[in-house]
Image 1 (tube, one colour):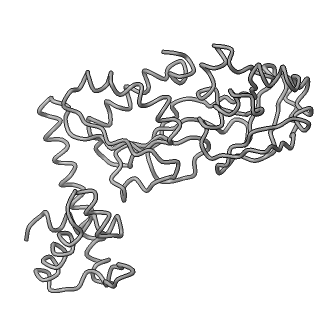
Image 2 (image 1 turned 120 degrees about the horizontal axis):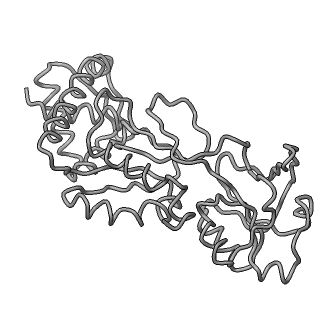
Image 3 (image 1 turned 135 degrees about the vertical axis):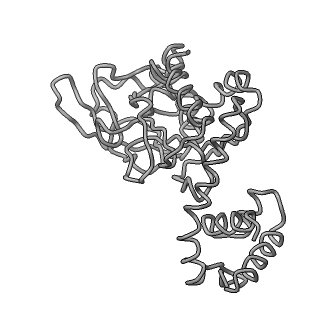
Length: 307
């Protein structure tokens, strides 16, 4: 029995689709289907129920997967170890990261990492969804905000500090709010993402928290787009400093409440996290990437600190 057939079976179980595995491998879905048929014939059991709308594992398929997946995992780890012993960092590093964070803080760093390791390739999956790393064959992920218990290995890369900002043109036209409660009389630009509410919270030096309901004519799910709208004078934003750090330094955005801690979620929980599957052996390409990010984020995000 060919090992490649079993690996394809495991990938189909993880991805739940012939088409998804075919895309990953750059082949036609019929190729994956034929491979599964060959494996079923060799095993003498049906592994999947197929119809035009869905693919679901049979009871035999589920039992076989539960027993065979750890073995395939060991085979993959053995391959990683063999490659690492060669001393050359090569292969493809699959990275999942939120869109705005990738544009500002990951993509600018990749040329340096690529120059240092010329045989290393990158597959950058830019999405704001929390992907299943094993099912999507992701080596390492970046996530923002509070984390739920996912069973993954996690490392806090940096705290996230937010700022309430407006452009000089907006302030000139509509005036600068003197206290947080004044925001109720201003146009606020809102981020449409899980965990971000339309009540902005302010904490003063005494630890006193004030919640201010805000509203405005624009809501978007993209943080960079929201920042550009604020830069053009459309309204006031609350954004993480890793998004607006450069604009604050250059004066194209003004920090309206520098004496307050601010959040649209919960205080003391937002952070930037590195996640990777909980494995007994971590491939060298992932270790190198994680250490590289730790070095670059020592003083905060590169966009914020202009490293």
